[in-house]
Amino acid sequence: MINVTPEISSIPFIANQALSQEQALIHASDLLRCAMAAAYECGDSLSGAKRDLAFSVVHLVEMANVMVERSLR
Image (cartoon, rainbow, N blue to C red; front, top):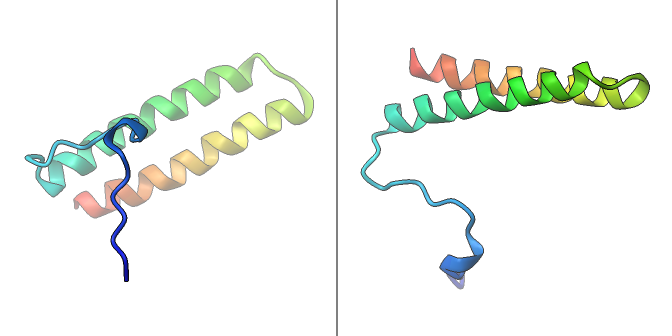
């Protein structure tokens, strides 16, 4: 198998290698909470199918956050 390493300039975000697994999960949970708030605010100003789509994102992010929070226990 060929190991292909992407160019650093093509990676929008690189996690600090010094983070522990717990610290990384806490940060991921914080990011998911922000994404949830942004999707909720966006959906709140929409109507119809676009509103449904925005709130489906809220639901998906909530589910992902529950899994992250569970792994922190």
